[in-house]
Image 1 (cartoon, rainbow, N blue to C red):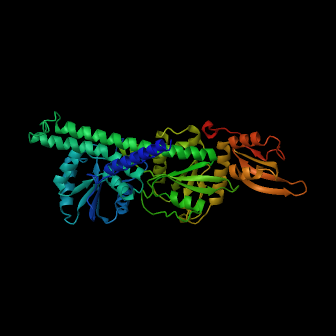
Image 2 (cartoon, rainbow, N blue to C red):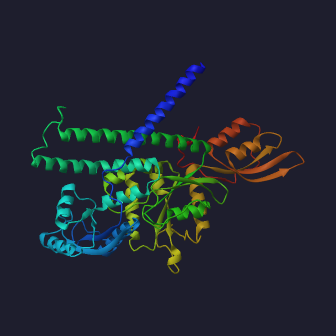
Length: 482
């Protein structure tokens, strides 16, 4: 039997080594990675003057300001020029009309110090990119490639790196089509490779499909691990609070303020957080909760980029509560709110999560005598601690409602194991010892399944008095029960 166990261990070790080797291959240098070094960037924003593409919640000046902020996120990248050019239809091949395109080309050619142009549109095709680069004589980036590059620079975990590799697949496919069309023009694109029976296009397409499948399988393994951790948290009945918001709204600063976790180092930059991270904290009743920090949102993020991070965002669906943080000082705060709510709705979250969401207006220390106009919104300063106690009380109230936790007092025999059991499985708030009869009155916060186990294990222990508070389990999730 010992030999059989040893064989199993060896097989597991071999499997782990194979997984690591495959991950190393998948996470190797990206062909799309931007060359290291400084970039002096001209930011060009196509200003839509009218029509369905024009957003009523923003202006061209605010949109180019966000594009500039994206560039400043990257080390050694600087903005040398900001150019706003009007367009009727930004979806056209060259984005602008002939006249404006000519004006823009002349402007860029008069900027010899510029090494790249950031065209502030969601995404351009690889063919358009090549023709623009030929016309302007410099590298051209769109929002997809800039945000992807920021993600690459900020990715710390294997999961984040895999998600970025997955987001690159559509770009690699697009580049492949462009490459093949060029080969076809040279009469080389349809030749078979070394008698393999496959054309260059077919070989490369197959390899990309295989790579995508391997990435998705690796992400699925990580998702299963996360699911296991989530089950363990459910068994302990820790309520989970997802903190969400537009990028750089102050989510991490707020979590640090709520938990007192010294190791958290918020950064004043876009997309500082790419991974789901969990942080333990306490509510006013001393109930333990887990705050989950999530990736920030951005207007006009391409679908493929959002889709590649969906495995991370799906964690939000298993929360008990969402706290939506807004930078209330930002001139586009209303548009940012609309962006976040739109993404949340597309995640197909349970309706009660959207209905019970707590909205937080952050950075009110920068606005004199600020009062929220939205009903039920809470004004806070995560940096200075203003309004945090009110926020914790609101979170606790919502958590008690959605989890069906009870706050009650029970009599326990001090000679038995009840008190240590309650400390382990519930939140003990107060213990009043009665030495004359060797008992204690214990005030606890306890979840439904834990309370059921308590009554089963200790059937002779009665509640000392009627429940202080019982909130009906309006949204009790059966998955929480053992």
